[in-house]
Amino acid sequence: MNIKDIKNLDKDQILELLGLEERSTTSSILWSLALVGVGAIAGAGVALLLAPQSGRELRDTVTRKFKNATDDMASAVRSKVDEVASQVQKG
Image 1 (cartoon, rainbow, N blue to C red):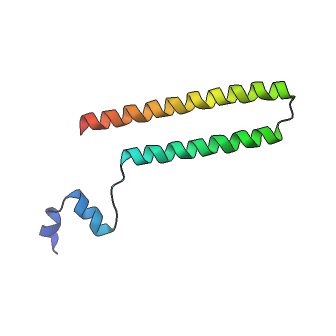
Image 2: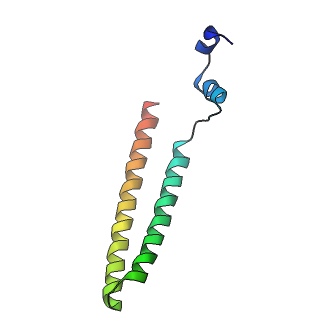
């Protein structure tokens, strides 16, 4: 293979020569959301174990934090969906 041959390769062929592959945006988003979910569950568990509050105060705090976490997650999902939609429109 010489320089002239490299000019005729497409993106997938170049990635294959390097031992790489293109990742889909969907799989990246799903992986990120899974990590956020695991982190939220672990954080909630630690908060419950270490909370120096009464039961009622703890329930109120957990409810508030859960609502904030779900709002943040929904915002992140909306942002990623908008990003993917703009990439699809460009492509």
